[in-house]
Length: 481
Ligand code: F0G
Image 1 (cartoon, helix red, strand yellow):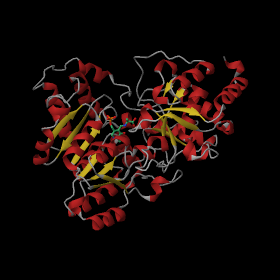
Image 2 (cartoon, helix red, strand yellow):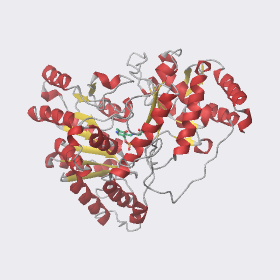
Image 3 (cartoon, protein in one colour):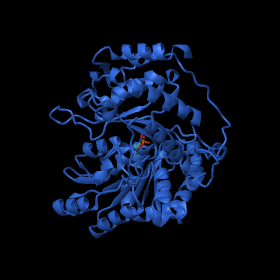
Image 4 (cartoon, helix red, strand yellow):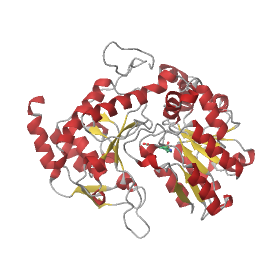
């Protein structure tokens, strides 16, 4: 895919063909306005039947391959000792060269077990950047998250190819300040989700590992978005361009003491798991699997998914396969940039990220600009994105808002799911919205849950801006329906 030369303007070229399809519907804007009001102006609460392009997430919705579907037929259904488990374990050992594997029902289950075993009250967990569920599990166990991403990581526009890098100087200072005993583990997240799917460099990971080894602090890798990160190391880190994807994977694994992942992302299935280097730690964690997940050889997953995971992980080593997401995301990002829409650069993995702080610079952060923009994007195109800003934060203990570093709307591009014309449609509608952005105003809570409020919270617009936007859309696109 990356080597194809074009006579005209290059476009990302799909190295697969679509053999199973799902029909979509595109409701008129008036219906969309009703649907998003019923959903409490929270895109998580929309019904899929009211959505044309579901760009909420890449989690559990990536397209599966013919080989994955075929593998599901040979799943060995048994409570204990399933052959399926041993095949998966073998594949993981082969790819990551780590001995011990624990299956879990999804990624956050690993975070649950990891935090229960390793996080003590008042301990500290430094990381390049947090993920919502990770932070919740660590704080539930009395720990504190310290984000030490490089400064460039939080800049919307940048030419730094590895905005997911950890600041090594800050890590060193943290260890010196608190002492290694207070640090439960250091966590590196591949394809750093909340700052726009930004990768870390292999060089950076190796430096983090050296510091961790020096102080005997375990290094934990969240590999949920590893596929994208692998592609970026291969294509952006000059030094490693001649390594194969397998070789890069092994180098990354060699730095890590624990690797956990959401297989809803990595491997294009559903489920998750954790690889552990140390036997004693493995045995400690193993005891919790039957308690929270399921017996040790399925961990809450269906064996069919596990068979598909084995193939999915193998297919992740194929550069054509893992390039599809990043290339489509780069295309979408660049087209939006041409239309003047503020987007996270360089383009990352997972999805295209719009900067709501700039897009809606007239909406105060306390009125959730990214949440409001997600509502507006749904209205304009029946496109479902996800707020990744202040709404996704937890309030401070004193009840005040924890204003987010970034106010993003994430438009995820699940792997091998959307066509280029659908991406072009999304670009068209968002460009229209950008021209009409002054019509958009903020949101306020009607119902605010205490934990992970962005999932179930219900909000209302601070004025009748949704009606104004709907009317303008109808005026501009009257002929199109
Ligand atoms: N770590 C990262 C980096 C993630 O992106 C996710 C999930 C998890 C852990 C938790 O895994 O969902 O299988 O329990 N991210 C999803 C998303 C929810 O939409 O970005 P899980």
